[in-house]
Length: 441
Image (cartoon, helix red, strand yellow):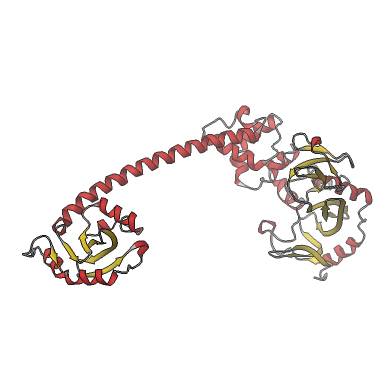
């Protein structure tokens, strides 16, 4: 937006007077603010900086020095031949009463066989008054699901909201150039070009009022400083003091805090440097993680075993109850030609019926339905369909065959059951039919 207030006009005018970035500063940004990587395949390695290839024999512990440009590389094994990297860096100035942070975007395009192409431009300036008021001037920041770019005119930009709401005009510089200048009142808290983990705006706002953050900054615990505004810092502060006392630098705060959580799980002393300051944090983290995983696996096995015992006990109880409740129907059998229909007489028969016809008569515990009678229809002694009869409505609720589909004999089976519903009704009313076991339809 265009400058409207006196302060905004002042910032717009002063912004024009800032010195342009020098070639020396650009070279520093290329070297210090971008990763230097080599892509290795089965036959060779190519340096992303110069684009030249060299032998795999030069790799030692995922590191190598390019023989063409003498750049020290971190090796990644991949088939990729191109890459794109974007990073931010900043230069701090003092202009009149303002602490100024000039932010730059650095984009690098890599391609096998060609030297890296760099594109660097200023994107945003933070003008900070002693009272903490911040005025931002710079390019338009466009953020969508598939786009994150800076462009447009150089204008006053509205931050919109506080930094903790992730305003799109809050830039976190990877590094600050050593030429950066900070006001003495900020430098005394340790805010200088080594700042990392917090932005300058956050540092100015919080560090003077937070001794713990100041301690972390002056101890150069930048990784811990990045978590300085979270509750975890207070939770692990006694352990952090052990690190400070032993001059142990936490390089990866996330894995270190996960490691402390594992120590806490195993009831280890979080104030003991032997535990808190491991020489190989990843190795110790993975060791405890695997140990905990094995404990959880055994606990899960024990829970599964106990659950299986309870299920078996429940099943045995259900089997007894099923026989007691439905045994008066067990003598029923309806036949017609090669079709025969009988009541399922045990829970095991429910299991066999469900397994053979691949439906849910067993898994959904139809044997527990005391108001439903379950019958099995067979054709030439082979299971064909399972029939559910409602003893309240005295009608067929469903008759399903393999994978819940109807068979070619479905209509005959349903008709045969319907013709014999009266027998089932008499037994339900404790009036057995005079005819004995078997009745021809």
